[in-house]
Image (cartoon, rainbow, N blue to C red):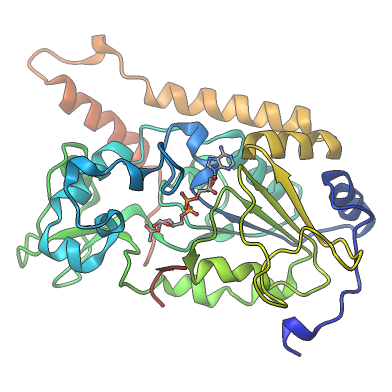
Length: 339
Ligand code: OAD
């Protein structure tokens, strides 16, 4: 039966976080899908894409692009890779720490409740929390590996990282083609792993959507792939993904008195903190966040005194970032489109 025609059997008492928590407890929820976007990483210092004033797409004037999204467009990259690498330098993993929200997702795994985290983010912060790689679907790829755009040969990660952190364009040793991190650019296919795991949505018993504008397809439409009886919680600064036609998009107004979709207006960290409090998980979440942050910080520390005589500070920093990034595992890679 198409999902649009399914009748809703399970409802929430109210469209509130409290009702979501009642539902989790009463139904013994065990298969949560988390869909996440750039809004979960802004508290880590990584700008999102579309927020007015602060979003990356509003701050690319210095790159003189024909249009903002060209920086992630494969055809443009093949002509002019420099703007992407200038941007990559600023957002390259190794300079940022996971947020409380990232640790909340890890906590769901610890509780045996996470079915999958479908993320659009390329920052690899999910991995840094220790979240098992099996649970993560990087729908738009990530910086964790890179390949030649011409001969497709996998590139040496250290070499790519060294170039990227200096804002330089790495080239393939075999064919001299431009090397690109295995991020899904506009005009490229999403990773096979994304499609291979879409059936998870049929099994989900709760959907949590965090920090995304739901502007990019096919990711955005996934919110409609859970069964109609499954509650959906959006935690975001702005209300997004609202119903445009029957059976597609969130219905926060619950016109028919059937509460299934809940919108929490605020930051992701505020939303997950409140959720954790209501679930009685707040102490655990705080501990996990604090311990994880402390551990990663100690790996990131760049002590001036550690720089050996004759070694450039920048070189030392690149080496130290390399050590941290070596802990990240590599990863493989229809086209993302803005709706
Ligand atoms: P966007 O920048 O489009 O949306 C981020 C959303 O998060 C917006 O709705 C913000 O209001 C919200 N937000 C920002 N900070 C927040 C916070 N601290 N707490 C809660 N909400 C917050 O980013 P994405 O939806 O992730 O694709 O963008 C999707 C894709 O567009 C990206 O993966 C990228 C981009 O083009 C590719 O590169 C292929």
